[in-house]
View 1 (tube, helix red, strand yellow):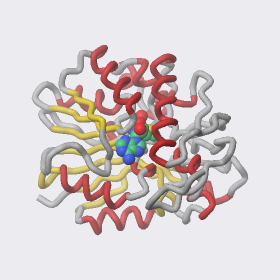
View 2 (cartoon, rainbow, N blue to C red; view 1 turned 30 degrees about the vertical axis):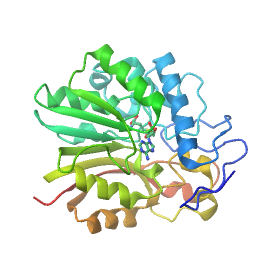
View 3 (cartoon, rainbow, N blue to C red; view 1 turned 180 degrees about the horizontal axis):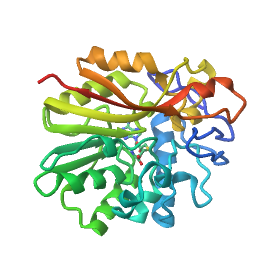
Length: 290
Ligand SMILES: C[S@@+](CC[C@H](N)C(=O)[O-])C[C@H]1O[C@@H](n2cnc3c(N)ncnc32)[C@H](O)[C@@H]1O
């Protein structure tokens, strides 16, 4: 594998194998063709989108025989039944989060919400129900197949207050100070430049606005060989930041009232690698100063 420019992510395991974290237990047998991290993420999540669209299985990337090294949660475990019932089976089937940020973000009617790495749109549709016709939800994702699936889901749900944008979370295609709330579910761990992502969140939020993100972090530094393994990055593990550094980064960006709303184990010890038990799925809220 070619090194990825600007990062130290250099290799994918030849069999593409990597655990998928603790929310499910899908070992990978798919190999990756992409030679750069962005390409590998797009390749992998295209497959999650296609499988979600065709299975509509509501059990995330681990369902229906899918064997991906993706960040994989399951709508069946992360969302309550009324939330799953409110979206399409295809959106639930492509669910690949590690938390339920919208469930605890207290969306209010009329709010503008931005979901970074919106995937099949599951969190956007849930937020849009609460934001209502006076509010609007924007989903941003860099994978064509995911944006296509999300737009199809929006049509099926007749969700007119949701717009899906093809774009990167490092350069959010929305104006300054335009959002009341930014959410993200298991995506920032995939970004090599996390500071750029938090800078973008700060830029798009209105003064006094807030973000609620679910993400994978680690209480111990992820080993260097794992950081350099592209398959581990695609699985949200190689890019899991040290939890204390992640929180400091948020505070240093200028956010206030940084609060950890949820903090649960993300992985057991699937490979006998003891450090994996230090992986956490956290949900964090913070505010842009008013
Ligand atoms: C683990 S999935 C989570 C999807 C969704 N949030 C959910 O909970 O189902 C990660 C998603 O983020 C997108 N993604 C990853 N890195 C991205 C980036 N730098 N910019 C935009 N989208 C990105 C992927 O295409 C994929 O759809």
